[in-house]
Image 1 (cartoon, rainbow, N blue to C red):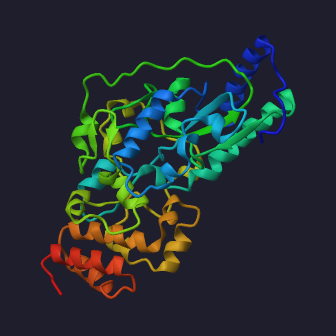
Image 2: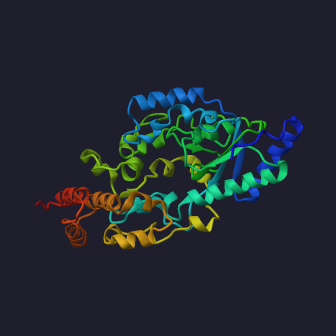
Image 3: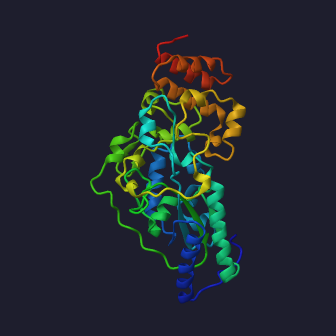
Length: 361
């Protein structure tokens, strides 16, 4: 925690420490570690404009902390540098994503959510990295984050040279693509910073063209209100009717813009056991998942990022997928079994889905 004055001021010692931090990160299973300063003025301007246009939808938390998101020292007083790290997550052995998307009877779950929730794992690694620094230099000021606070993680990672922001707004790296998580260590140590990468998207627009709901409105611009990941994960209410047919069988997140990205040819599978596929979620049918009871949902998805959305939204998403699925007796029977569900949110999406198959109340 940020409670003590910085213990190091000698530039040569700081350069040596920065190199050690990178080595310790590799030993801890982090694929890359780099260091950024805290200057995010341009990113702040873009963020405030994006928020002013309402493109964040009902993600009110993006506004709640004001400029603390873009001013690290305002969030954690004394912060001078951000040590940022990436950890690959692509699950080895998962069924090919394009094959799942092409089979309308199956449920597509974003590749990052097929295994255990990454937050605790990555946070623990970043904490261990901070502990190694403490062992080396004594007490120093720091805080660890893994998507757990108002942090502009992609901007900071880009400043540190972990990659560049692609046209889909995700971070890209020539050697790793985009299938990785990011973690941060805010610190008062005046470490030397790394140089950013130049962008390498060129004239490619595959991510823009493939987006099923046209949520990528222009290069480097995303309207979250249309994004399938937002609709299936962040959005708490009814999914806009006009967007439901465009969602296909995507029931938790959407990887289309990553799947078509040429740089993901170089993405490497994760060696972390926690990120391995669980519960057959890489190849499960919509009918099978829709049949889970709430107890089964909670038990099977314990420790999964999916459990965060809750059973009600899980059924809402699956109902949309079933409405878009090829018609069959199994699909209709599954939907009818939920027609009287206690949640109006679920019932309304089931009615819509049955209507798509020609069955009306």
